Image (cartoon, rainbow, N blue to C red; front, side, top):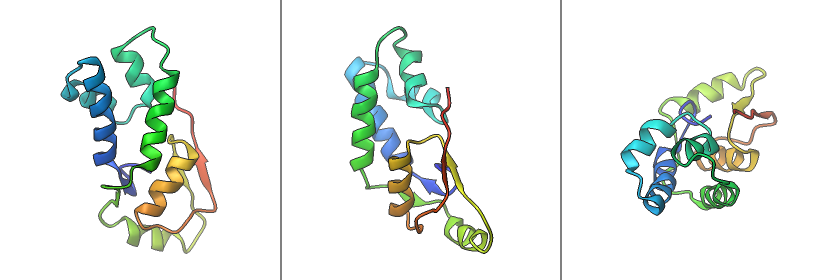
Length: 120
């Protein structure tokens, strides 16, 4: 989803910004590592052995509320419209609610099939 049909880079980078600042970690280092990785993996990479459960929930809640900066990837709306002539689905490692929000905010109709894949 993210980077394929939805561009939520601005929100993701703002979320990592507050987290990096909280721990005094250079944001540039966090961003180099984090893109394309699960949030928990990034937190563990920079702060190994720490229970990040509360922070994961905090970040998830913040990202579910944030809307500014979510857009469709150029050409994606037309591509999805064409794909909709047959069966298709959205597959993402994002939590379902977050995926549904981002898909809608980016201007896509809701998906009947949304596959949430847990990445470890």
